[in-house]
Image (cartoon, rainbow, N blue to C red):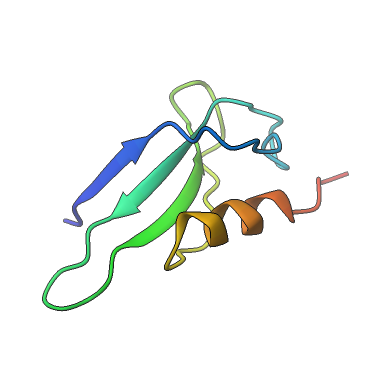
Amino acid sequence: MEDYTDFIVDNELKPCPFCGNTKLTGRMYIGKEGFRNRFAILCNYWEPGCGAESGHYHTLKEAIDSWNRRTPQP
């Protein structure tokens, strides 16, 4: 099981492109055995959302930028 920490992201995030949820969370996956921490943005399925997740990135800014570049689904 992977260790992680969820947190509120203060930056402006666009709504989830799949379900429109605006209650999004940042997640930091804790690096182990010499590996770096990784960051992602999540659409909280318990808020209710769909569980979509950005890719994993070395910085929170990269994760936010990736999330905000997603194209909304028709």
